[in-house]
Structures are given as C-alpha cells and as structure tokens.
Amino acid sequence: MAARTVRRMDATLDTGLDCGPTAGPDTGFGTGLGTGLDAGLDAGRGAAPDAAPDAGSGAGPDAGRPGHQRPAVTELRLAAFGAHRSAVFPLGPVTLFTGPSGSGKSHALDAYQALSRLASGATLAEAFPDPRARVPERAVPDAERRRGFRLGCTVDGPVGPVHLELAVQAEPSLRLVGERLTHNGEILLTTALRDPGRRSVQAAWLTGGATGMTRAPLPDDRLGTALLPLRVAGATAGQRRVLAAAEQVVVALRSVFPCDPRPERMRGAVPSGTGRLRGDCANLADVLRRTRRECGTRHALLTTAARTGCAGPVAGLDVRPHPDGSVTALLDRGPAAPGTALGRLGAGELRFLALALVLLTGPGVLAVDPAAELLSAQQALTVLADGFDHGLDGRQRAELLRLALLSCARGHIRLVAAIGEETAGTARALPGVSVVDLGP
Image (cartoon, rainbow, N blue to C red; front, side):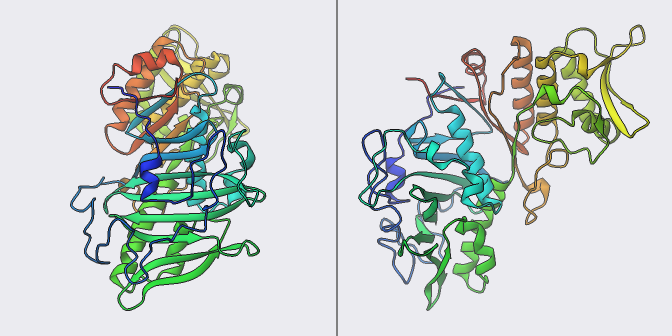
C-alpha cells in the first residue's frame, strides 16, 4: 500500500516550535528563531497556548491513545533542510523514499541520523559536520545575519506520542537555539537563546506542584532532551512525566543502525572478533562465523535468501578459519563443487548478502549502542539505508523487500531507506510498505 505521504510542516509547527516564517528560496528561517520558543508558556503549568491540561492529569489530544509497545519514531519533520522547504514524513515499519536525484531522499535520512547522534550524546558539530550544506542555497539571512534549519520528530511508545522540535542556527555559528518537547499538547521542555554572547540557552522544564517550572541554562551544542535525566530528579509527578517522555525519545532515536554495505571491503579475510556487524559490513565474514555457531535459525533463513540473491547453487554459508586467526566466508556449492569465496562474488551479491543479514538479525548482532534504560526486547531498531537497492537486480530487490516485511512485522526491526523508481514500482503494490514519493 503506497500513498504520497508528504505533507506540509506548518500546521505541526503552530503547536510545536515557533521559529518565525518558514524558510524557503526567498527567506531566512525567521527572526523569531530561538527567542520566541517559550511564548505562551505558563510558568505554573507549562501548557502550550492551545492546551492547558493539569501537570499530572494526562489529559490532552493524545490521552487514551494506545502507544507502541516499543518506542519508535513515527514521524519526521524538516523545514529549510536541504531540498525540503517544509515537509512532514510519516514513518511506518517499512518506509521507502523515492524520487529523482536532488529530490531530498538522502537529506531525509541524514536528518534522521543526525537526530540519532544528538540523542546519543554527540555535539551539534558531530551531528552536522557541514551544517551550511543543509541550508537551502537561496535562503536569505535574517536581520541578525543568521541562517539555519528546523527538524523534528514524533516518537510513539508506552507514554503515547511525544513531539520533539529543534531549531538549528548554521550561520554565522552552529548553535541549537531552540528546542521543544511536548506531550498531550503540553510543553515539557523548552529552550531559547536569550544572550547570543553566551554559549548556552535558557531552558525551562515541567516540575509541577508549587514550583511549576524549573529554569536553568543548558549548553547550546547538545540536545537538551538527552540531558534531562542528568538534571531532573523525578521527585514530583511532573518531573516523572518529563523523564518518561525524554527517555522514550532518547531510546527510539539511539536505536538506529546506519547501513551502507561496501563490497570492496568485504572481499578479503577479516580478523575474528566480536561478531557484531559494522555499518560498512566489512566484517561480514566474522559475523557469519558467529551466526552460524549461535543463531542456527537465522543463519538458515539467510542461506535460503542467498539461494535467491546469489548466482549458482547454494547449499549453505560457510566460514573458513586461517592460521593467523582471520576468517573468510564462502558459499557452499554442495558436495559436487568447491565453495566460492565471498571475494569472488559480484558487488550486487555482496550488498544483497549484507542487507539480508541486517534485516534478519538485530541489536545483538549489529554494532549499535542501544539505550541501557530498556531491555533489547523492548526496543525497536531502525535500519537507515541510503541507496538500499543500489547495484541489485530485480530478484534481489524483491527478496529484500520480502525479508523487510517479514522482519519488520515482528516489531523489533524498522526500515527507513532510499530507493530507485524501479524498486518503488514493486514496493507500491506491497501491503505494509510506505513509499514516500518526493518527485514533482
């Protein structure tokens, strides 16, 4: 089932981040960026202008709505970010971005990965190595000569939908000038740049009781939501609500595996190590060694997939150890033929095997750093794959789509990927797949 799932961001921002005019080809990102984020914030209750529920009541537009068992990002919002002027992308278990070159497929995945890095404790400079490249080329600076972008997401989970909005100044210096965390229409955290001469923002978070809101400075180069567990004691109902919402957002955003298989790095012998797959999949042979020994069922499923995605007969996936401790993976061709080392396979076959392995495994096998606050069984890992179908033929693409639906239906894996039009044509006919068309 596919639909054009892009819609404008403006309505969402009305009750989230107030950053002034939407940036586009002829405007900057608004003179109100970072200075008007807490407008309408009631110091006693922290309610947004359109909703004023009591701090512990749970009332609001999302109250009573069943959340996801595992925290998951269900919506991505971008404004003045690369090719995206103002867009909202709903994200399902399998979400595939498609469109012509330059339409913003990679920008959407880059934004998701940047949010993940910030939630993991990275600085803005680490999350956005080249922030000026994210600002639309023709965006006009505001009166203070500032340009930047906005991004946000919705994380559904046990506490219901939680909304995070960020305003990032890219020029003249990189700063997180505004952040807002809301739940049930109520502001739980808001930050704003008050003194441009200081490397900090003024933050206010819900406390409840007689205090209402707690105010304190936070660094302007880190995600405030990720810092809340270090600053909030959880002594009041309001504080516990803030912590639950922040934890849900951080858990979902940290549970991300950016995957870009590099066939040229997968051909030779690799050291025997922990058996956790890296993002470039260069240590595929070592991971196959581990799955063959510890995960018989998944290894068998991968072998079945290899029969579809690799040329010639495939009786199994084997690993050959070497005296120096390294290992080489090979396709078992059966008793009548010698095995074929992975180094002799085509680039498309290697990419296929790596992506199939990613979809069939999980956090225990992939090199990710999931949040320690929840058991792995209570987390959903999102795989980010730009150029998901690059170099693959029709049967390989169809098999990967089948594996994606099979694995994502279980809830422990989600897929957000960029694909070409040919793969999109196949995916549009598959129930359970969301295809985001970025074309004109």
